Amino acid sequence: MYLQAVAADGRLVSAYNALGYVYSRQGKRQEAVAAFRRAAELAPRDPTIRRNLALAYHDAGLDQQAIQELQVAINLAPADQQAPLRQLLQEWMRS
Image (cartoon, rainbow, N blue to C red; front, side, top):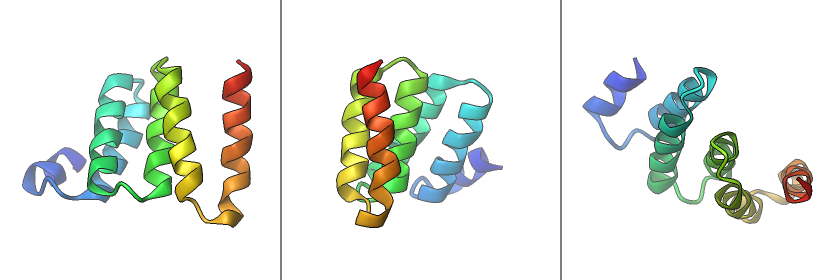
């Protein structure tokens, strides 16, 4: 379904975001990174998409990219949503 949506309209941010989630759940890490990266290209100021991309990078073992992307998500997120992202960042930096 999501593949059809992005094939029909390559600018559907929500479809790329959902596709990334599906790929993540299926263990298709590189595909998840690619889908979330495309969503981030289309909506570069969306902190949720940037967080999702960071998580995909982390799952793919791309720790440096994950940390950088999570920092972007923190900077874009509203103040009341930053605490859990900061906590996750601290966990990643310790490991």
